[in-house]
Amino acid sequence: MYNDILLFNCTIAHALINCHKNTLTEEEAVRLLEPIPGRDYRYIISENYQNIYYTAAENEIIDIAVQNIQNLPLNQQACAYYVLFQSCMIKRPFNLFHRNNLNLRTNFTSAKFGNKVTWEQSFKDLFVKFTRELNEFQPDEDCNYTISNQSALNCQLRADLVYIDTPYFSKANKGTITYHNRYHFLEGLMHYGDIIPAINFNKVNREINIGCNREFEQRGTYLDELESLIRIHQDSIIALSYTTEGYPDVETIRNIIARYKPNTQVYSLGKHSFALNRHNAERCEVLILGR
Image (cartoon, rainbow, N blue to C red; front, side, top):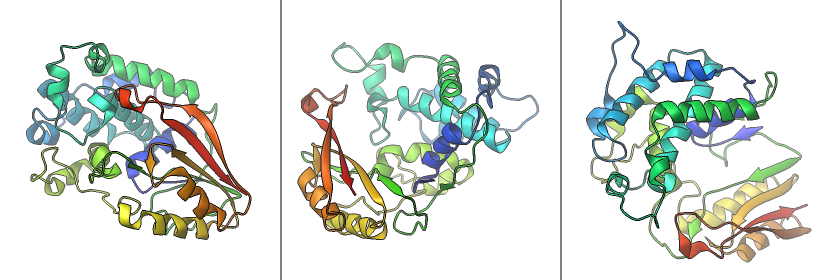
């Protein structure tokens, strides 16, 4: 069972665990990048996101691909969205959408930051790459996992083991960049026809206010919400993914879980620094397990 508050994440999950290999072939994926003769297209991204995330030519490709995807059968849609999302992210500095920083890519001069070769790969090449990878990891036949798109605190699904991966706050950055703000563009593509009235033109990144929810997104309420979630699943084994660079710290999170699961331990998964942030060289991933 899988639950996420953002529909684009649920769609990724559907592609990975509920669709079998070759649901979408490389040839079918590449055809999504070309307009179909006789079909009328809207150009919502091209007209509203000039010089923000992608070049003009790339914006047009995204517009065309999304509308072609919408005409596919459900399982093929999920696979095609997966490929589109991966392609969109890998072409972005930091793989995020919280800044209008296309200039970092187009004005790239130093090899110390990012990967110009990766950013400039064509959507065609990336669609082939990610379709191939998807087909490698998909199951051999259709599965029937439950995928739920709702608030974690309202989700009624129960399991023997509950794995939790909430957004977390950086120790160093006390700003208000939320998980939604980082990935709003992908969530917007899932609701393509509703994007325009949802664009916040007062923000430089033109955040799309679709799927926006403050649950687990505010420092002041995070711990209370986490405890509520642990309480809901106190009869299950709890596995929570976290980082040593997160706020609150690991020990605080461990203590909350230990209130409901007396046998609670922290396991280090080793150092995992961000490739584009050399200041996080000592950052470690941990798994907090309560049984």
